[in-house]
Length: 89
Image (cartoon, rainbow, N blue to C red; front, side, top):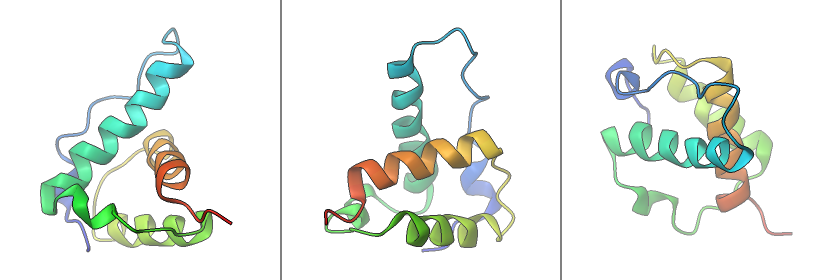
């Protein structure tokens, strides 16, 4: 499930600060869709219920392969995955 540097080349710049909170939340979804689907489809997320720490480690592992993702983008990806694919209990 590792992403290569090429997986992140389609990332856009972080949303300007004037955007609404919902636009920022949508940006997290966009990042997950853009980044993850470069190497695999989003069906891999079905049934995933990882803790915040587990998602953080998984994402960092992908980034360690050389993917250039900003700290803000990392946070938005992490927040989205935890909210939509985090542990329910």
